[in-house]
Image 1 (cartoon, rainbow, N blue to C red):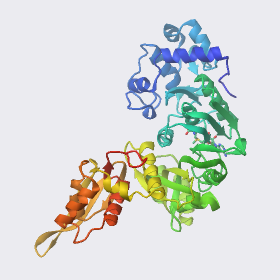
Image 2 (image 1 turned 180 degrees about the horizontal axis):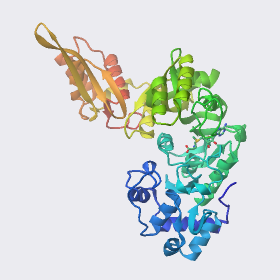
Image 3 (image 1 turned 45 degrees about the vertical axis):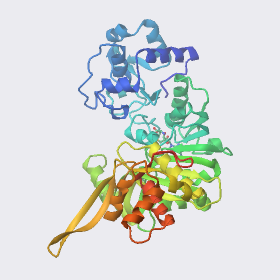
Image 4 (image 1 turned 90 degrees about the vertical axis):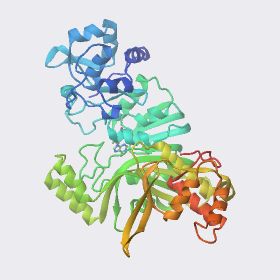
Length: 505
Ligand SMILES: C[S@@+](CC[C@H](N)C(=O)[O-])C[C@H]1O[C@@H](n2cnc3c(N)ncnc32)[C@H](O)[C@@H]1O
């Protein structure tokens, strides 16, 4: 049963004003929890040792709704007026604790995130969970402040779009956030419970250009197309579906595969798709090729950027889960066998960004490893850069560009002993931004990159290179421009000014 109630617009507005008035923002709540962002918030139940006192209204809201701990009526009365309490109760957000009527406990978890107030189900580890309908209902509404949702949101650009669709929406977080820049946003979920929470969250935030619908993947929007589609599907490999938000079938890809297969029908040309999930590199096909197979016959209409967050062999992955007590060793063995039989070399937790072309051309496919703090800006830059290279003749512009060597570039040189002397064995540039990357480069090439100071054009640098002979007797413009082009795409060289329409990274 749903505990929250769809009150009147005035009741929603009253609760919203209480939250705003108390400074219930993700920055303030994170500060009270002594964490750098809301995705790292630890509840008292999870062992937090700071911010335990209730000194003001914000502390009270954190204790009730984020920690989900019961609070004595006297303390609630100290910081909430009778009217405020009535407004909160009118939406069914607070109730008397069933075992101790002198205390109030929340019926949902409610938190500020992405400049919104979001409600989801009480967590099983939260002591206030006794008020949840069941301890772990299969249709449990997934929290929007897990690091997983944080990673998913971090990969979606907050740029304007026309029709935004979130499938597997849970609380509706991505669609609700997008509603501030999209003309209209849709949130779809297979469970009635999630759909109602998404609708509740829309009303709590007074968002009107938003529609929540219940159904299997794209079923509720049959015949409709969108210019942005996003998904954070269930992807945990599981033989049966016990938790709808989590279990993705035997190989974890049952839902994701159908989401990708539906893109040719629902994503408009020029539109983009963003997804964070777990998949596998297999002996016979790496994840990029597997994604292309899932897209079906029209896969050549889609460019693909895969940004990996974590990758490890199945044995290690399940060994770690079992060691952490998240699954039994018997389950780990069973899962490991399954993935070995599937020829899986690595379990890969990654984000995909797919772009449907507007013109007929070759599709590009790129994989990068995410760096600390990297997100949609970096992926958008890469997509934009590669698109420009595919769709325009950049040679002339490139020769006039004035790149600089990235301040993140580090040159690593190894030496070996030969004839009693140290000789350069290998040299490579390593980057931690915009992605984690290692690029093999001759020492001569690496050294001449220091000429890229943001003032000299590529043409001027080429003239200098020709005079010094650092790259051999003859260096042609075309080949040099190609070399520069690759280094820009790798993030080693940075354009000080946008080239054609591509912004700098
Ligand atoms: C991991 S949660 C993600 C929720 C939210 N997007 C987020 O990132 O916080 C996955 C969601 O997918 C929904 N789901 C599972 N199977 C589905 C299906 N076949 N069609 C639509 N939604 C589905 C679940 O109910 C759950 O809300």
